[in-house]
Length: 287
Image 1 (cartoon, rainbow, N blue to C red):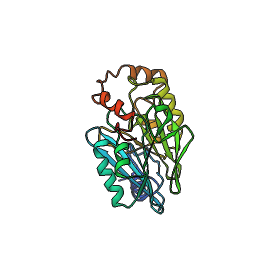
Image 2 (image 1 turned 45 degrees about the vertical axis):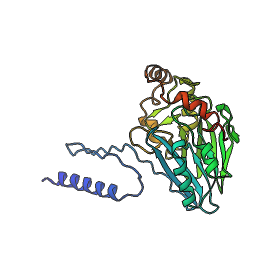
Image 3 (image 1 turned 120 degrees about the vertical axis):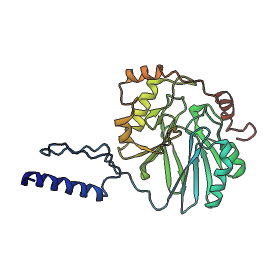
């Protein structure tokens, strides 16, 4: 081996060692070196470092297999105040038991929008955990104890969620941003490598595109994004990933509208039951 090739292979080995031990990058998807060893090209598909949670913050992601819905439990571990985002009716007892096991006080059951693919568990949670209040955006048209508007904050312990309007899937869609923990809960507005459909309820493709770009993808690149659904087993994404890899939202607005107009999706099987029920917190006699 010539001295030049030896130096090149030694340099590659050192780079691989540094990258394998570096704590600077939270995710590194692929390192490639060209074959002639004259130039070294490192292709890093993602190098964003996400924020660690603070010691007084609790986070739990829960899942409903039937509707592929994610439910999120957030809490202040010192005050024990907690809130839950997008609970599902059939799993409300599961969620209540988790809250009881962890000795939390569930103060709010929150929805990102009025869902069409499942019935919300907020009404039943209010029965199971007295003192819990239901929360939804005023623009949703659904009934709740507390109505929120853009710019409002939902406080639990020393933490607070900022309410950002992200209509387009429905008029009442909002995204909840927890700045101190570097995370946001995007509902159906932004999914992992996708977005919510715009062909029913008050859907509007142009509005959705503008909402996602102005209210979600404008967050810092390393913010983690947690959607209301995923159908491929993915649990979380980041702003940087979606800005680079989302096959719909990386297009121009006109291209996005064309894509959304030609999805040809089936009629939601739960919509005729879910919408009327979700207008009253999921239970006709409790809200």
